[in-house]
Image 1 (tube, rainbow, N blue to C red):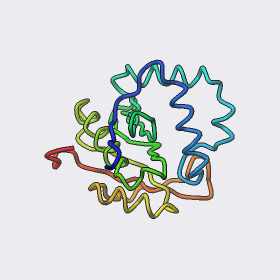
Image 2: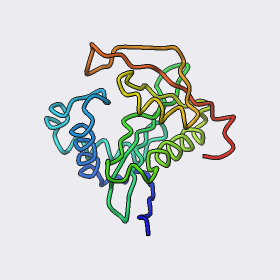
Image 3: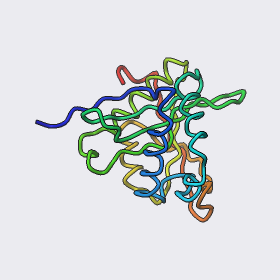
Image 4: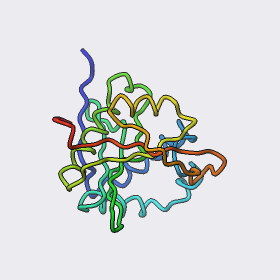
Length: 174
């Protein structure tokens, strides 16, 4: 029997879980994120507690956690920019390698996208490292397409990332 996967929004008291998953993601895939493991390890644990509390309760920011058999094994952030033409984003997606074959990444992105749609987003964006072809194919399978926008990665200025978008009004289910 294959393990079951569930997703839930982070709870206010789950700062330690957030820190554990964030540092695991940076250890396993340092090229994929806008921060380094060294940076994350320097952050005070209380900062992760504050982030968890904010992401548990904010109407503009959320973190969703993936669980297998009750154990945290992945995460994704969802947020709406604070700008006049605010765009919605999913970011920092990571699933533990041992459970990737179970399609937890899809589950995380779909739950986060649905939450963003419930907040009024018609489109969901994602910045994806151009070096990470696997991530590009993953997002394309979820109906994200390139916008043509590019930028230098925040933590790896020599590498570029591309902006992808998914149109939610065309989605009939998440």
